[in-house]
Amino acid sequence: MTARTSIHGEWSTRLAFVLAATGSAVGLGNIWRFPYMAGENGGGAFVIVYLLCVALVGLPIMMSEILVGRRGRRNPMDSLRQLASDDGRSTVWQYAGMMGILTGILILSFYSVVAGWALAYIPNAASGIFAGATAADTQAIFDDLTANPWALLFWHTLFMGMTIAVTVRGVRHGLEKAVRILMPALLVLLLIMVGYAMRIGEFEQAVAFLFRPDFSALGPQGVLAAMGQAFFTLSLGMGAIMIYGSYLPARTSIPRSAVAIALMDTAVALIAGLAIFPVVFGSMLEPAAGPGLVFVTLPLAFGEMPYGSFFAVLFFVLLVFGAWTSAISLLEPVVTWLVERLEFTRVQAALLAGGVIWLLGIGSVLSFNAWAEYTLFDRTFFQMLDDLTANIMLPLGGLFIALFAGWVMTRKTSGGELAGEPGWFYPTWRFVIRYITPVAVLAVFLNAIGLV
Ligand code: PFF
Image (spheres, rainbow, N blue to C red):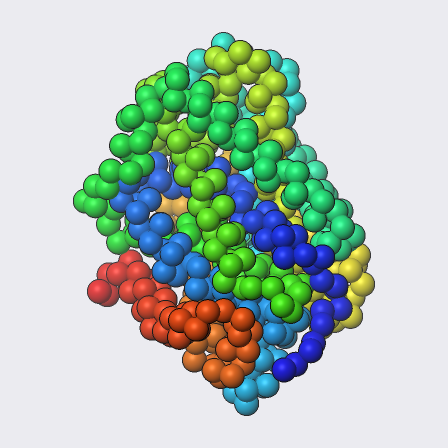
């Protein structure tokens, strides 16, 4: 048994880890991305494939990431290199970690721009602008914001600043405390929204849309999108969960933690869907409206409810906090890499990485206005980044992690990290991660490019 420790410290308890990882998982992916992806891909069939991917692909990979992180105790690249050399295997596996670090940089660059929308909506909501607004009004408010590059740049800059500010202090202190309060609060607020949607909107139509599968509406690209969503929402395939695993105390149960994180993440996404689609159908809006969906429909609901401006402010504050706890986990892998490999201080590393990501984010800012016409494969810069990372880089990173945990690590090493579990657990996990998960990921890929 190795007794490595991370130079960045450790979570105080298992709960702290679960909350931090849930903070990473729950974010814009659940409340912004999930509803609009489901809306664009026909609803029910997308949701079912997404749930299957969470269970068969996401969960086993999450356990593998935590396991590799805790065993390696370093940034994703060096953890993979270390474990490969511990077991006498090729250190070429470290490049899977490198790709993960790069993926995090790309995701955070556009994620911060969307989080900036949520920030911008806080003063918007407080001004009472949504009160009594029609669907056309809320659409116009959203369009005005995205058409203005300076406004987007301002909010993007503020959000990156907030993310860097937490990262320089280290994950443990600010974050552990924040997630303990913010995650339950977000859930309570979403439940209130669902209650409202049940009373006012077309709830049954929404339930049918989300849970009645029409597989003819999906197609291979839709299946790939559902798998991409599973990776994105669970923060898998880029080392975020791996780096959080590297701060996990030695004796905590990995499978139990992973199941708790995945359950909470899935619950939040489904609840968000049940809060949003009744309003969409009730106001005759288009479910396939794309990235603006949540920013147009929810304000509509707020505009009609008593104390709507108050709830709207609260909602966007919590959305920002959800995004914030995710953004920190997107920045952490590259920061630890800079600290451990290049011997930067944490402050230098956070500023440098954050600065590069901020710069890249300007591309996404402009893709909603000045560059809106420049498309590749019919996608703007922002859409390209979103698609490329969620649908290709995260699943590929996840595939490498599955192959690493299942085939490269020896039974002795991976078994050592899962030793406290009931007897059936290890052989089951190992079978799934060796055969089921990689085959599923590959099948979805090959299907999407038309080879299967
Ligand atoms: N899981 C986050 C969300 O759903 O908003 C986004 C994310 C965070 C993706 C961290 C990937 C990641 F590594």
